[in-house]
Image (cartoon, rainbow, N blue to C red):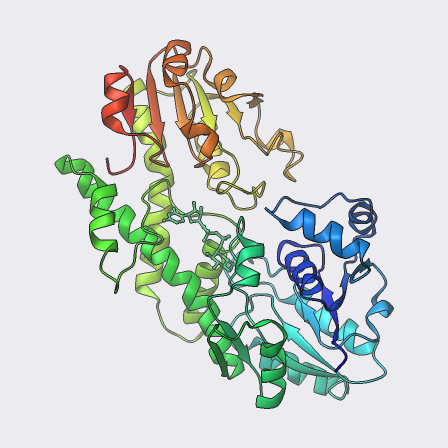
Length: 436
Ligand code: UGA
């Protein structure tokens, strides 16, 4: 049987590119469609729009063997079926997700079809959206061109390729079981659990999963507060509770809170969806509140040691929202940097993969006076303190005696608990982690 030809809309975004490249790796002729012509031109030259471990190699190989194509012409999706929609759903000011790009993409695909196709919504959309899209197509008399299926994604940045090839589960929400099975069958290895369900259940599974992960992080971060008060060690407490298989050890690392383009956005969207239904998501609101507190806490620790931060020079290590990614979207480092600036601190920042605010999609003017260091040692040199915000492995490997000697005060506030406090004490470093 001939393999399906697959289309991916938003094919150069974080989810779309991983989806397109990995489908091509599985042997499907895949076309990634993205409106951004420049990005398409760049990838054809071998320049990926972001870094994701293992992705470059797959793109290179599948472009070469002809299984992967990129285009900025929607007509090139004509013979594709199914077509995945992987466009962004950014937060609106009230926390709700903006689904306008999803609707526009589905309509564009449907209008450019002669024959019907299955349109698979990968983008994270609020409850009821898939049903609304189907209704929208009906109103536009396009329902004979596209059958809507929900297939939320659970990839983590930094391990996206591995997560795609070895998913924990495949969730498909559809009105027809046959179509749902076809979509699940595209990329579910036999041992992977598949849940075929309704649109609404699929949408809720996606949001509830991210909200639950956020909940685990805020939970451990709350316990960390008490650890600090009683001289406990959150890492031991975390291990102790995580060994219970009902709890499990993942997402129990205390720190300066969760961030990035998904957890916070999806949590806010879920809270807004409760409000829309006249209900209050009390637990989820607290999860968000604890997270915001956690960001301020690292700054307050600096203040407690240095007195005022006005005029103080602080080196900040880590701008990406987590290690193994160059993604700065909604990174906790940005509000923390802004908060430090508002208190009058003078900052030098470093990140192994992010090299300027401009490169990360911001204006340098939004972060007045912030300097970029080429190395972590340069970021520490002559500063009153060092603040660690991202758990980059290279930070763990730093020569701490050199760091100590280059700081004016041997003070390190570590929002990622990268070091052992006893070793830091022995090295005469005033070291303040989170819950240790
Ligand atoms: C998250 C989910 O983990 C994925 O399953 C989901 O598919 C994705 O969102 C999405 O909706 O697209 P991701 O945004 O890549 O993935 O990031 P995570 O690995 O979940 O980390 C999020 C934040 O939590 C980071 O700031 C990280 O440092 C923080 N974190 C994570 C902790 O503070 N403690 C932990 O124990 C784990």
